[in-house]
Length: 495
Length: 130
Image (cartoon, each protein chain N blue to C red):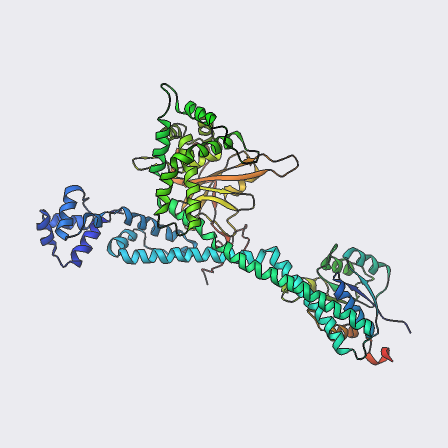
């Protein structure tokens, strides 16, 4: 399948302008048959020839550029991965044509789909709240209790002729005390809905930040540059790591958060404090004008994420890290030792190795706590990662909690038939006081199954025998017969 | 003439107060208890004509009491009127499966409770009030 959009766009624009193929070919100084090949994507076109064609069409060259369209293609191609479309065959390969020929319609479709996803997630979040919120359940119980007492007492006063005065007083006081408690519960309930409105609203900024980071494929040249500049300040003959240690030592006066952090986390926090100043301007430039970041909260969250990104870039300089990753076959333990970082930091950095021209493997990244709350995620095309609702319990990101510190791994097949290699490890984020439950987080990376042979974590695991049928979010998964099913599918696709 | 004894198992003091009053006025002798464990001990030890049982009570909950009562051959036929919250269809279904004799949803009317208990105990209005 061709991935090239330019030919299709040239044809669409030419027709729009009412130009014959021969005429445009003449203007561009090529034969009509060659232009025909270009328009059918049989010949690549770039450089001076593309300039001449743009001129012949009377459009700016940028209009024929495909970088922004490519993103739309990528995003649209993720759509069929949605369980909603699990039983549709779709038109694989037609996405490029769609975007090339009807870019406005493609954008519209994408916006519609994104809005659907947002609403879907909001619905799941709300349903969770209403069904499981202990506060709501308890409040409703209290309302019914107080109303019951009020009704019973009121009926006695009403029905009993010649009720003795002290009984009358007793039941009036019951009515009054339960009415008071009822109004307290009612106020608390009203407050709950007020504040839950705000809280549900604030679920979206994180979505914006995710979208923003994805838009950049989790790679930020500007931040890499700041880190690289800082690292150039090394003394003659001083290796980067030694220089960083020296800088951190000089900066050691800065206060640390009041928790028991691991040495790697302390190093990371200090590095973040160190780079916060130098990187401030780049972060501001990146977040201020980003259309994906719709509000102040989203910009604040994005800025924090970018600061951490820059700190990681300083601790794990791009070129050295990529080289070490390739050399070790993406062995996270080797990388963590070599760069004096935690397993999680190394894993997250792996997911940023997307510099054009010097790319590492592209990983999906996900971090969850034992209750399934996802705190960091970076999906892959065709591998959507859940944020809300009950995720698929078969994912190793959850299984890893059974053996903390040990890598859990498996091949998984999504309902769409796509296969991925997943590997995860539960790590201790903070050390906790004796007798207090350990605070574990599970960190998972995933990549298409075809690429797993390049990763040491997959060694010795047979893809055909270790393949697990998995879903994404339980309620959205069409595998009705799954033994791990917790909830009925929200959408019955077989109807 | 022996009086008809009822046990009311409910932890909300004001509801207990009102229910006891209404049931006593209807001619019943009423014992009340506010937690599940005490309720079961009392049921095993003494004889009651019927029980009013709230599902949401501290200690052993209403379901546990129902199960324990039905497991005891001497209490297997004891009429039990279960109080549930309106809308708690699941609670109701479960209580029915494990042997509740009837249900009343909160908020209930006093007359409804009296009526139900009279039908359980065969106690006619005229007979006792006279």
